[in-house]
Amino acid sequence: MIPNLGEKRMTTELERPLVGQVALVSGASSGLGHACAVALARAGAQVVVNHHPHDIDKAHEVVAEINAFGGQAIPFPADVSDQAQVQSLFAQAKQIFGTVHILVNNAGIQQDAKFTEMSLDQWQRVIDVNLTGQFLCAQEACREFIRRGVQKDLSPAAGKIICMSSVHQAIPWAGHVNYSASKGGVMMLMESLAQEMAPHRIRVNAIAPGAVRTPINRDAWDTPEALNKLLTLIPYGRIGEPDDIGRAAVWLASDASDYITGTTLVVDGGMMLYSAFNNNG
Ligand code: BGC
Image 1 (cartoon, protein in one colour):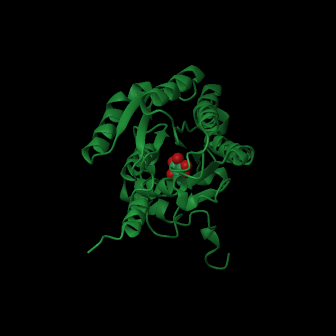
Image 2: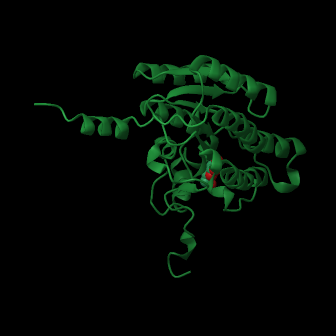
Image 3: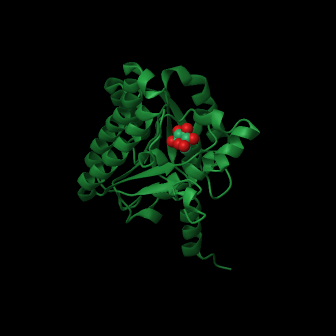
């Protein structure tokens, strides 16, 4: 039987839609970044696993996990709030892989405190990493996407940026004003950038995760009592798993979402649906 190459090609495109593309994931040594790096590598991308200089061992574990299934990844340290380190991160990625096609702007932290007790340092550090870090990485990515332009055989887009936001870009969060302010900022950074970059065929979107089982919110799920309390906020009745976000990142990076830019994909099991109103308010 003569194989139907058209169908075969389509299957590969569906299963491994990112073959031939280079993805850089910031903060990829744990949590959502880890999940995105693995999911993008499974989808065929070569992945730069960026990590904070302190997290080198965990980054090497992520790279080993990717190599174990035949994926390609390299670790690279950079504090995303430091411009010189971000520039050297992108320079290294280009030197090793030739270019970058996908940025997952993921690195983020929480430093929670009551408002009247929050130090300027706690405020500043969260804004520096969560918001300025996304600005710096997106700027380097856009410069590279514009320099290289569209490679028609790979994708109709010159580049794709996925900003990791949060349901707290919209849900106010007492005790976390630094974090929610940073994510509100990410939303407008993403939308303004999407508008500015669309003529260059650069797509910029965000994912807004709800509660996902990662180290950042361990207190919210690691005892049965905490988890039950958390589940009252999630109509779908389960906590998110990191791969829920990994799959969303692959879709936003792939040509399946080619006409989508400036959008936030909420991945939250319904957390944003005002569940307090589910019994007639
Ligand atoms: C935060 C988590 C929190 C979730 C839902 C995320 O953005 O990082 O700590 O559990 O939002 O509130």
